Length: 253
Ligand SMILES: [Zn+2]
Ligand SMILES: [Zn+2]
Image (tube, rainbow, N blue to C red; front, side, top):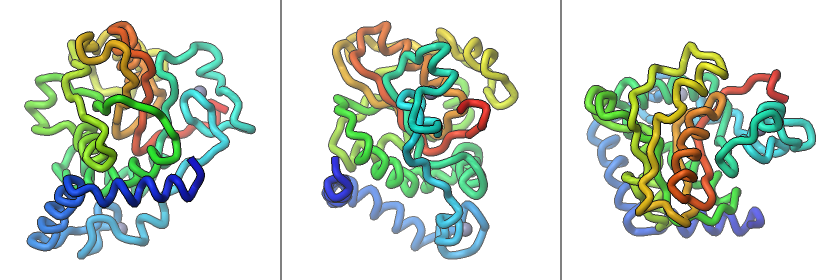
């Protein structure tokens, strides 16, 4: 899709009545409870212009598989040594301040209106990647973690994307069948082991389908890879991943 085509797509998505209603609800919440910026704490905006200006979006050239920046867009070392199960993943921006603080607030401090705001960035990214998908799903939480947190931040990003694009949202396509420990302190190999066989794809929903998985952050891509593996084992055709942020390490180039 050309740049104009992508812009037209985003504009038409934003005018979808169900999406407008969803956005209106969150604007109403902000009107009743004036928010503070999730990046710098200034009063009046959930996310201020100054913080937005500090975000470094990710544009090509990048690895055609995992989306990490590479010279000339060649496949990165990680994807070369072990081909991912997903077809491609892309992230909106680098995982660094102030976006890091905002995602932390979304994930751990119940600042769930941020998901509506950041879903717009995923919509813009989706308009550029031109993936043909049958439905959208989110990386699921385990039952215990969902109970403890009360919401799945990735689902809160995926749902408005579905409303805007009119692509169905299927929360039951993937299940987490094993609780996994936090990936934060694990290295690449440990992350792979930690999430391997943690997910299960619902064959009735996924067979023959092209699926988009949404997650908040990707680091090594291990979680999305495990999800893609489960979906493909259950008969999925193509599996793509979109995340809001990704960590970046020059060693991957
Ligand atoms: Zn700010
Ligand atoms: Zn790669």
